[in-house]
Image 1 (cartoon, rainbow, N blue to C red):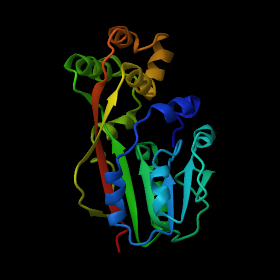
Image 2 (image 1 turned 135 degrees about the vertical axis):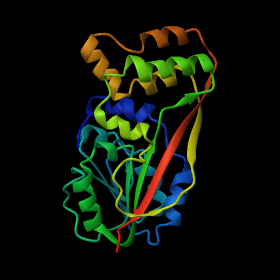
Image 3 (image 1 turned 90 degrees about the vertical axis):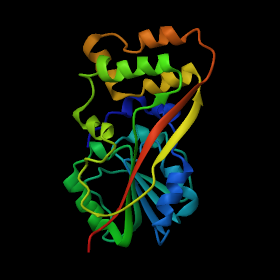
Length: 244
C-alpha cells in the first residue's frame, strides 16, 4: 500500500468531502450485527466518524501515523497503524469492513485474504469511493476537466484508473449486493475548491516534476469570483459477502 498523503494530513482532513449519510444507511441495511467494524485505510477518519453512532467498537487503520493523528477522538474508536494486507486481527472479528477512497492503493489479493479471514459469517465488505467532481459553472468545469485530463495526464499514479472506472474494474470476488447510485453535492467557495484540488496526489507530482504549481491558472481565474459553486461528486459503492 502506498502512503501518498502523510505530508498533507491536515489539508486532507480539512478539504476532502464528507460522504453522504445515504451511503452509510445503505451499508447498514446489509449489516446484520453492529458489534465490531474495521475501517481500513481510514486516513483522518472521515468515513470512520460516520460509523461511530452505529457500532459498539470500531478499529480504524492506516499506514500514515500523521493522518491518524489528525482523526477525531471517539470513545468507541481505536486508531491503529497497520497495513491493510497484514493485520494482527483475529479470525472472524468483524461485522463490517469498510474501505473509503483507498482500495485502489492496496494489493487486492493480499487484502482480500485478510477480509475473508477477519469477517464474521454473514459479515459485509463495503468499498466506497468518489470520482471526478463536476461543477455547474461551465467555464470552471471545463478548466478542471483540462487540468485533470490534460495538464496532469502524466502525473497521476497508475492506480488512479480504478477511480476513473468507478471501481467497476477492481477485482471483487465476493457475493455482490446490488445497490443504488449515489452522489454528493456541495456549495463551495473558490477557496474551498482550490483547497480540495490541492489534495490531489497529481498536483504534488506535477510540482515535483516541473517546479511549478499546476493550479496557478485556475487560481488566477477564480480570484475575482465571489460566488459559490455547486459541485457534485459521483459516489460509488460496492458491497459483498464472502462466498460460501
